[in-house]
Image (cartoon, rainbow, N blue to C red; front, top):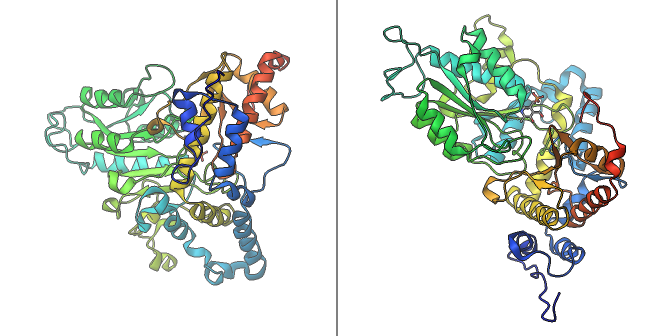
Length: 476
Ligand SMILES: Cc1ncc(COP(=O)(O)O)c(C=O)c1O
């Protein structure tokens, strides 16, 4: 530092997180990151939200992108349902307040603002993988019945998906090679069940750098293949944390006469969405990550209103029209809402915490949480750049393309991840070389981020990670 010392920008009310983005955008840390972190924490309008979460004092929790921690409100809504079970027994379905019967629709309505949907377009139900099965299956059935999106101008289908002149127009599903594997397993199974060869019709967009997917490559795949009936992409990649442009991908899908579906596991609760305005056809996500509803908590789905009334591929009585569900008719009448994609009895105890956890996020404000999340990841990336030359950042630097976590890349990432856990920093490892670090906005301080980088630096400087064996298998 020379005699003309310039200080880091002073936080102001308009942008309390300015010093974090300034650090990343080339200014570095003019003085001392300890001081920058302290200033950011002092100015953080969300700092008190952390008090509403139960987190162990002896650990820095950087894994909320895998499993969020409980908030007081989540535990309270769980306790309430447990108490209702004790008091009301079977009567809870109708007499609990609110009654258990409409839990999927009620939690769907509470989730709707987080994804920019109307209340009837969202339901809490099943799990991500099951929801992919039923939704991809539903839209494949629509395509095979010739009811797909407008394909005027698409030679292969002459405006519909009905085969013409023996042409092979079995619909393909477009995905990408960096997807979470379960998504591919489910889609392949749905194709197979319709006699469609997944080796041919699961079309996979490749990554240029092994970390991200270029949206232009999705568009190019749609130009190159006339048979794509469903584009199914993540809103954010599970490993690198790249955030996708939902609007652009949806437009490209619709221009190609395909449905647009999304796996939003790695963004809902961390990044605001506008599925309705973007024209998304359907989406699925979980509630155990950024929604903090607990291990194995109920999944969620979005189906645009224009598709309500379709018969779900995996139909079940819980998706039946609610008014007549208990008339026990053999004929199935789907509910006229996203609730139709529910299947069986909802897992009340795995749904109960979601009510409180959504309330915690709602009160903090999703836009405010997103602003803080970007500042936390800016700060983290700036520190990695400055202090960890042996480490790469696999997450895009642009805010538009960054989700809620940072992929810290190191050739010995598995060992590094174990060494960090042993030193009280909870992260996870994703092969081949990524330690995912998630400074989740509701409960992470800027000082925590600095502490994580200090500990990584100390481990690498002492080669302490070499003491850890890498084992195959297990949960990482
Ligand atoms: C992006 C993504 N998709 C799908 C899944 C599978 O979710 P589930 O086990 O709830 O079906 C996960 C699980 O972590 C995920 O991260």
